[in-house]
Amino acid sequence: MRILVIEDEIKMARAIRRGVEQGSYAVDVAADGDAGLRAALARDPDAVILDLMLPGLDGFEVVRELRSRGRWMPILVLTARDAVADRIQGLDGGADDYLVKPFAFGELLARLRALLRRDVRERPSELVVGDVVLDPAAHRVTRGGRPVALSTKEFALLEFMMRRPGLGLSRDRSLEHVWDYDYGGASNVVDVYVGYLRRKLEQPFGKPLIRTVRGVGYSLEPA
Ligand code: CA
Image 1 (cartoon, rainbow, N blue to C red):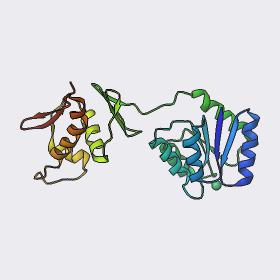
Image 2 (cartoon, rainbow, N blue to C red):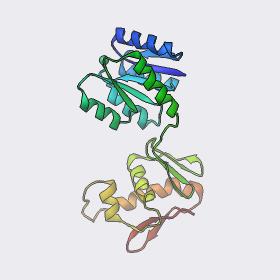
Image 3 (cartoon, protein in one colour):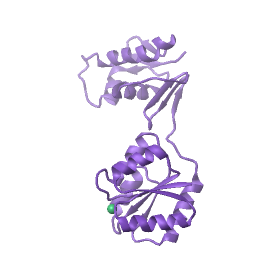
Image 4 (tube, helix red, strand yellow):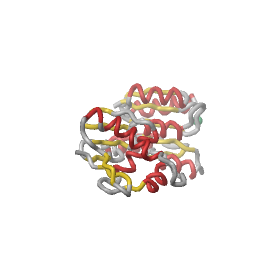
């Protein structure tokens, strides 16, 4: 088991390293958020111990970046005493557990063991409609196992439709959900983006995906 410790205070980092090594884990240490993120992405450690207050990228941003890139290793965050808001934000942002400084190393190891035991990396579930798979967290789309690169808006429109497969979705409703404001009805932006999706998800595969529902809008119906 390889553990990555991201902590800028040298004394604290050393102490954590010693403590974690006593649990016979291999330990890497990164001294700021950017280095920590790079190390986490490159080495894919089994767990990360992350201080929230860091120079450069802070701990919250490190969690967010890792999760948005589909990395689901357990993350234990270290927070200052009384920083309840930090703990909540850290957990909401995708951290798995927290420990308040100062802590006993026995407790750190116990928390770490519990996180590693959980093992099942709980991923937000993928959306599957026919042979199209969309991973909301990793921002990945495949059709028939082949990756398809989509822009942010194309992705958002496809996700909206995949959450309601087979339903005739009006342009107005799609606009509200994907573009988040009232376009005024005259715009053909939904038609344009459905065109983009068809070009990327139908044409290369020679199979239909989005049906035009006359007088309504569109319906996702993969062949
Ligand atoms: Ca710190």
